[in-house]
Image (cartoon, rainbow, N blue to C red):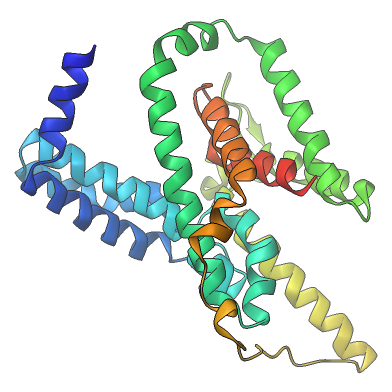
Length: 288
C-alpha cells in the first residue's frame, strides 16, 4: 500500500500534472461561481478537452475542476446571497450577513481555508478508511437510509431555532418537490402534467437558488405594500480585522472544521446521499 501511495504522489507532483490541476481549479471556480451551474456542469463542459490528453493529466485536470466547482459556489453565496451550487446555500446563511457588515474578504477567506482543510482531511480519511468503510456502506439498506434521512430532517429543523415548525414545513415542501418527475422504479409520471421538461424532475440547483431569491422578492413585496421598504447598504469595513483572517483565529475553530470534515467524509462514503446533505448536516452541527 505504501508503495502504491508513493507511486501516486510521484505521478501527481510532476510539473505537467500540477499545471493541469491549477488550470482545472481555476476553470472550476469560474464556472462554479455562476449560480445554477456547479461542478457537475463544469465537468460536463470540460470533459471533451480531456479527449486529447494523456490519462494522468486528464484525471488531474478533472479532479481540479470538481474541487474548484464545489468551492466556487460559495463566492456568490457570500457576496450575493445566491449560491452557485446547492451545497453552498449553507454558506449564505452567515456569509452574506458578513458581507453586509463589510467583512466579505474575511468570509471568503474562511470559506476558502475551511474548504481546503476539510478536503485534505477527507482525502486522508479516504486513503486510510475507504476499504473497511466501503464494506460497511454496502450493507446499508432502506432502513438505514431512512434513519439517516430522518436524522437529517430533525437536525435541519433544529437549525430554524426560532421556529422548528417552519423548518419542518420547508423540509417536507422540498420532499414534495422532489417527487415531481418519473418514478425511478416503474417510470410512472408524477405531477408532470404531460410536460416532457418535467420528466427528469426539478433541478436541485434551480430550486435552491429560486427559494433564496424568491424569499427575498416576497419579503420586499410585503415591505412595499406596508410602505416600509428599506435599502440594504453594505457597510464599509473598518479596521484590519474586518478584512483579514489571522491563522490563529482560523485554527481556533479547529473543532468545528474537524467535526464538519468527519461528517462530510462519512456522508460522502455512503452511496446516494450527496454533498448537499453533508453540508447542511455540518452546518446544523456547528450551529448547535
